[in-house]
Structure formats: C-alpha cells, structure tokens
Length: 312
Image 1 (cartoon, rainbow, N blue to C red):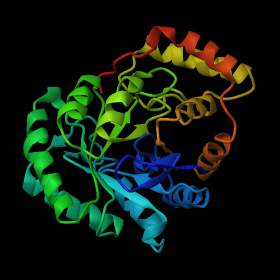
Image 2 (cartoon, one colour):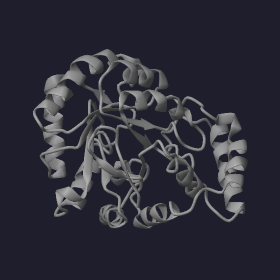
Image 3 (cartoon, one colour):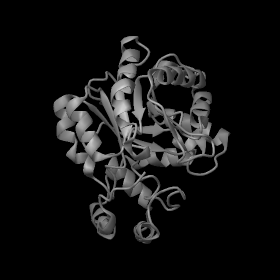
Image 4 (tube, helix red, strand yellow):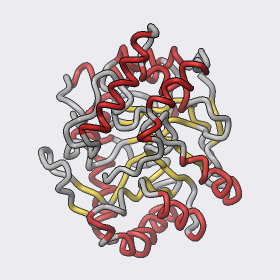
C-alpha cells in the first residue's frame, strides 16, 4: 500500500481508503460479523483511513464500524464522520437536515460514543445540497462556524465538506477555508469532472478525497440499489459495459478501481463494501495498472452517460 499526504491535514493516507456506508446495509442487507471482518481485512491490507456518517443506515454504519475498531490502537487509523444530515433506518431519501450549532455538537458526541473515540481526524459537513438547497446557506454559515469551533477546541483535526454538485464545490473551494474535500462520484469511469477542481484545490492547499469509484454501484456487476436516480436506459448502458468487461475476462469494478485510484494528484480513493473478499481484491488490484485498451472501450460504451449529473 502506498501512502500520500492529504493536503495540509497532517494525515498520510493510504491510496485506498474505506467508507463505511455499506456496513449499515445501505446497498443491501449485510451480516454484521462479515462487515467487521471486512474492516479488519482493510487494516491488515494497509488501509489506514475510514470514513462514516450518522446518516448511513440510520446510525448502523457508525455502530458496526465502532465494533470493528474496538481494541484497535487509535494510532493505526485515521477516522472521519459527518454532521448535518440524519436518516432513519428505513427512510432513505427522507432525510432530516440540521446545521445548527447545537445539533452539530450533539451529533459529534453521539458519533464519538458509537465509534468509541474522543477525536476525529476530519469532520465533513454533509450533503448541504439536499432538499433543493433550502439549507445550503445555513450549512455554510452556522454549520461551518460550529465545525470550526470544534476544530479550535481540539475535538477534530480538520474541516471538510462531503457533497456532490460541481458548482457548490467551485464556490466552497474558492471562498471558504477548509482543509479537505470529500468529492464523490466525480472521478470514476463515467465522470471525471473532479479534474476541474484539482488546480483550485492545489492552489488553496486542500486535500482531496475521491469518493465512490464504483459510481454508487453503477460500475459493478450487481448494479445500483433501487434508490439510485439512474433511469432504466442509463442502467442498461452500465450493464452493457459490465457485460463487455466480463467477456474480456475481468469485471468492471476492478477496472473502475484501477482507474480511480491511479491519478497522481488524488491522495486517496474511498470505496465501500461489507465483504472481506472484496476488500482483499480491491487492495490486490492496485498492484496492476488499468488495461488502457479496455478502458477506452468501456468509456466508449459509457459515452451517453459520461459526466451526467445525477439528482441525488
């Protein structure tokens, strides 16, 4: 495993990092013991950065990750969580957004209890574009100031956002002092718009975390969950790309990860799974560069959906 500095954060992160959304059955039901084993496999494979959120699985992801990390020395891993977005266990898409100072402080306390820690290396302000951006300005004012207070108090090390829209990223990176940025679904086989942000991030000294190399499961053999906004026509295009990879003797997720995790200006790429074997395969596939001819053919198949804006 290779390690890279994450901007000014002081963190030297593994090239591949692990998101814990899958641990909370966000994509499909999971066995808790298997999910815990997946985290331990990641640690054994050299992964040293884990990201989670209270919204994932209605706090289940934080709970399972906390169990997995119990007894693991805190200096073996970096940990981040999120604030501002909260989801009930069976309420995907029916989120509560609250960027008040009181809720953010309480949220951090709750996450710390579930995860068994008193310190987070990064705190991301979560999904401020949701609900038609009715809470965006609240998040950028009171929410941001509350998180900065937590940094000054030493409860967190770095301030970040975890959002999707490119125009909001341009605004935040240009005008708001942050340490890191969790950009998801923008550097994968079907969307490379993250490249537009790299010069600005470099100029501002902001550490980039590349999330969702599998495009929220669009770039997998199993395909995305029912909640994904891709249309039936869109899904058929991704299935065609996956079928093409299988005919070449590989799978699309391997190609997707090799592509996403091999950009020299992206310190870490964050994937999520609850399967130990998938973790092992992901770590091992980094040793091989992507097949450039296969990559070109797959991108050609995906042409109708390249850089498409999803309504998450």
